[in-house]
Length: 271
Image 1 (cartoon, one colour):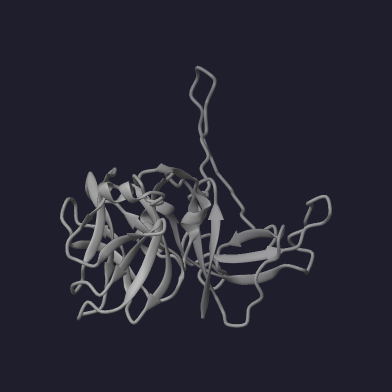
Image 2 (image 1 turned 45 degrees about the vertical axis):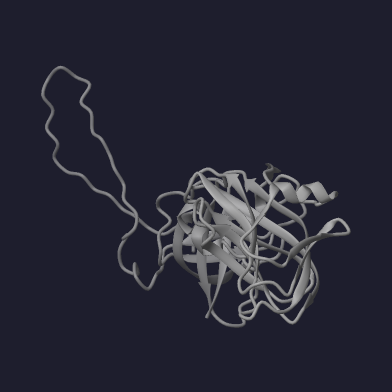
């Protein structure tokens, strides 16, 4: 069983509930479609309907980047590009091993878990993209993340062992955090270069995610396919569970009226 996330810019209708069935069908060049044309395919069963803020903490990784749909704010780090030696004045190191080298910061053979950091102002509940460029990493690993408030203890971090531009998303829980990198060798050995340390706030995301469980080997919808939902006939085969109708009878005369009988009929128009 696999899952697929369907993104909605607006809140889905309240009648959509977990257990409903998702279908999809192709559209024509004019974006028209026919639901009961015989081309409709079952996608899967709805597991959950949530606003992105409800599942934000599950998405704070570089590999599950739904947050990449949001715009980034201005740079919050001072002198993170290390274009001159004086840039180090904006930074603090907890132990030895950090030096300026050709417009970068070099770590080499310092102290166990030595940190290099800068305090930044943050908004509680906002999401930040923390990024760094790593090169020439040798015989060690590097941690990147934000600290707990004004301390140097990590609030959240990721460990990297390769040369690349690495990043992690962090949900701030304090008005200030320290953006920091750390040598991860227990004996302080190894070396690497860091450059372009960056922290930028993501704009507040505002969309809805409908999570659908799909059977293995089910084909995913194509671009411009029309996706629609139906109540499960297995759960509502002989009734209208999940739907309701409401009728108001009004007597516009000043004299009394007597109601003898009311009849109603409900049937499925299509599936």
